[in-house]
Image 1 (tube, rainbow, N blue to C red):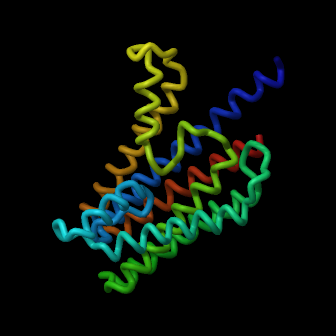
Image 2 (tube, rainbow, N blue to C red; image 1 turned 120 degrees about the horizontal axis):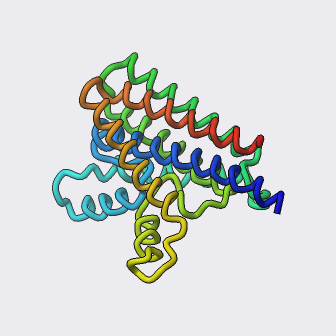
Length: 227
């Protein structure tokens, strides 16, 4: 009973870190969609849809940009998965901490480069898009050992479905509603932050804000693992 009582706040700290990372995803996707020519670097469901639209020439969807983002995400997830491995105890291993820390550093460097050059030429835009997607793919594999399937940090479609399906209105128990709702709210708030800063100050500053949120989420997870 004593061990179980101690595990409850630990799980809460992990959940908080995942929620903050989810908010950073919303901010990063706001930046990539609004300032990097309508592409998602975290939400691959949207990119797959955009690729389908682009294949038939609907609108002016940038097929190449979305392809680069999808490929970058896959590469990032593969590399991170190899670094972290599959036989990890539940929690945040040291390798995950390094991956997340490196991801935060990459986002900061991209934002700084963007601030220096100003307007991104198309090759530079594709490079920033690809590297952001790599970071987001790596993040998914890095937080996998935490074992929280309700807060995936990059997408909330399944979270919305689980929240509705398990609700009392649907005949369920209504358990886990708080982290699930939190993930949905975090994604939306992060997107609002990103969109607001893009509109007021530009993409580079919004990306710096995303790096700050990403770093806070990473430090929260590291703190939880050390508890």
